[in-house]
Length: 501
Image (cartoon, rainbow, N blue to C red; front, side, top):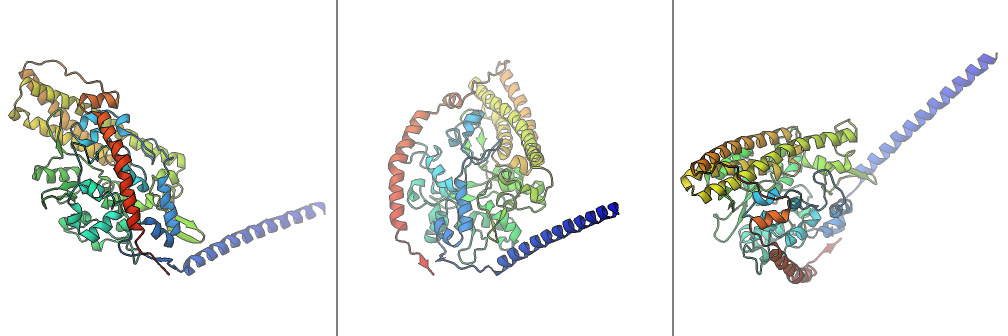
């Protein structure tokens, strides 16, 4: 009788626990239904009327506060990964070899790793690459330098015309270009649909025989990023006095096809100050490499990983922080991958480590080749003897830069990145063999000394840069001219009408 009573108690407890579990599950289901119903019944009620040229992100933010608040988080610079993140990093300080590789080009003065979108205007004003427009002998740079930095670029293009925007010098639009990358760069003001505002991307699609208007929504979630995160150059031959942004995609997106395009025009960004090679400078071919990686091939969009969906107050929206996916792995990587956060981070770093290892080996070979070429010139080598060697340096460094300049490319397409770098090593090795023969011909049978470039300052002094002068000029410009720009901009923007409903 005692055993029967005990058995009965166990039975009641099982029923009680089972009932509690069912009630709990039903509660979760009811909460989910309520949340989905709230999402369905949500009605967008605009607070302000947004016009086609509204470049102020805070005005858009009145209608879309959640998206705007996450966009403001691009101001945060505290997140760091092993190789990037969104904090300030002096790339020349980290890797002084870059100064030598870009000798004779403005990147040897200053090259910092990218911060968030909200910093775009501040960074382009302060970088030594844009110089001090009133005194810099290498500048001022063209207005084109603003192109991927601001919503005001879209506005000015609409108001003045694309051709007129591209004319003139950088300082000309200093008081006009004041709002950083934001809403107007990617969205239609009336429908909020993603839309392409970059004339260069539209032209690039046309050159490939494609109609960008036929792009799917998923394609657009990457193409709006491809308006800026691409390889490009300044086309100065189209209209006198203007520098148009041009994507060199006519023959294809691969490193070889883009090189073929440049070679067909005998184009060079600059002549190297040490080797005299006609050089190409990769900008940031993020989209090109992404398209060659597994995520691009599976049509995983840039926004899927860099702008994950967030639910708040029963509303689902896309984060506009546009930061490394490693910051929010549960909302990015783990949406598709079941591995732990620790495993996924290791997977990313493993790929970066391998690409960086090979990239650094190629850098050392390139530095040696530049100085070996200089030695050959010093000994009396002629242009006929050096022609193939200079082309070898150009081709090899182009491959290095295509991988090195791509933000996240070591993860987006590690296999393609390693293929490109190994091809670059083959080219520069063959080039250095040819150089050794020329040096021997002129009686030099020793190893050309590798310079002391353990510090950025050493490397910059070696190539003749007067950095104290550049910094003084820039600081004076920042203190005197930029406040004038801001005052004019505030006066003008205060007169813009905002219609409230």
